[in-house]
Length: 235
Image (cartoon, rainbow, N blue to C red; front, side, top):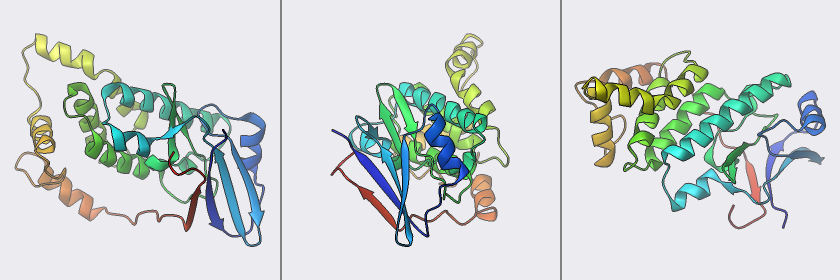
């Protein structure tokens, strides 16, 4: 059975370069999309047949290491595909309700009218990972800590950050051989999350300067769209 989600945008629909590129080439990692206009509104329909949204997945379970590896691989590939086809990477949606999963792969919505900064959206997604992490999965916790901490830095490198995540297990084994203890900031962070504390609670070793930095550089969030219509009760 075919399932779709539809995003509504106020304004007349125009078949721009990006939509034509998506239709002709079908870049790997992106959901098939069809645009149409009705009166003074534009509608973007995404085929999500056989897939489940990230939001629905983690309402029933927690995020583990394998899930993170699948996601980071798919996200990195989607960014590269967008660049190959000269698509604006900042129009890849990273809200959990617009990321879909099927048979070990994640898929993304490319939304031409989007007005956002992809790196800020990725940081917000790491905050979601913090809330939905499986805290019994040591490697998942380490990866999420690294992602969240790394995306707080100004002008961070996504490629470098993902590479570091993929080598976490190897690096951990080397540290154990050298009998080097965990970073105290990481240890405190993991403990706080397991106890249900806020990720930004002030601590002596790390979070006070981080909080001050975030408050100083806080930007307006990208607002939600006026209309989202899901043609199934649950994706």
